[in-house]
Amino acid sequence: GEELRGREYEEAAADAAAAADAAKDDADSEVSGSDKDGDSDAEEELRREADLKRKLAQCRVKNGNEHPKTVARILKLVSCLIGEYKLNETQELLDEILPVCKREGGTHYIKCIQNRAFCLFKQYRFREALEMFEQQEALVGPHGALYENLAHTHNSLGDYEKAEEYFSKAMDLVSDAGKKGGILLGMGLVNERKGSPSSALPFLERALALYKETYGEDGSSLIAKAHMSVGQCHETMKNLAAATDHIRCAVRIFRKTVGDSPLTANALGVLGRLLLDQNERQEAEPVILQALELEVSKDAFHPDTVITPQQQN
Image 1 (cartoon, rainbow, N blue to C red):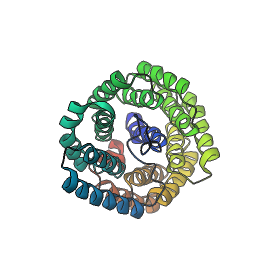
Image 2 (tube, rainbow, N blue to C red; image 1 turned 90 degrees about the vertical axis):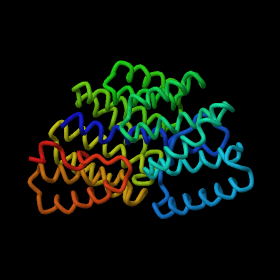
Image 3 (cartoon, rainbow, N blue to C red; image 1 turned 120 degrees about the vertical axis):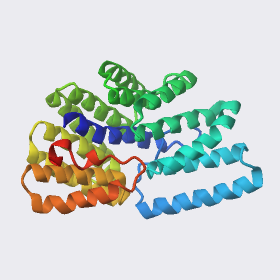
Image 4 (cartoon, rainbow, N blue to C red; image 1 turned 90 degrees about the horizontal axis):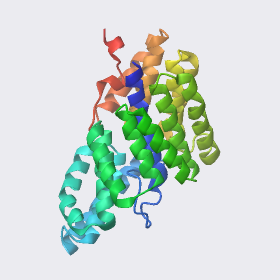
């Protein structure tokens, strides 16, 4: 129950960190997020993917597969694919460019390692993701977003002391509101995992408030992610009405900002579970069906996202 719920929004908290940092990806930042926040709609993201693939194909013909321009095009495409949870395709592209990136070193190697780490994280392969992030740390040194990613990964592995250590380091290094929000979400999750949801809730509510101040009431998927965190914390505390209100908000905002994303599937699954817990079966069943239909479309399927072990009986 509790561990499962933690996993469900743990990834969203890490996505928040990635999204906040991703805005710099097309500039000169050496360490960038793995995916966009996704505030453009899903159709726009598909158009962007198609455009990136077209430009990559042209670049391969003109420059060859190992040219730095080709590698740069692949890394941009990978960032898009990770955000769409097309993780198998992502893995193939990263496997293709890893040898040349490792040989050449520099920014492309750092981005390749980072994207491998994000892909592994989204595949729930946390130990392997940690190894990648630690390699990145050895190359780039202190960096707020990287420390936050290390914290989320340690948290996934149950090493809460290490998670708190890295969240604290990250908070000291960031000033951007979006990044601070992601750290607050992570710190709340650590407290909940340690069995203290009442201590977690203030961190999560601060993150939600910060995102609303920055993006408006529903102007970013980060707000939906924060609603998920607050809602699931209320669920742990058995405040089911408050939990349901927050998850409904999350579903609405995810649909607006990312369309039929795995994030939307996760939110629908949680909403369905809450409705079942409150004996609202008539509303719950179509919600859970929607969640399952969306969940099976991603490359890292977890049936527990929408059906907890207790509810399978």
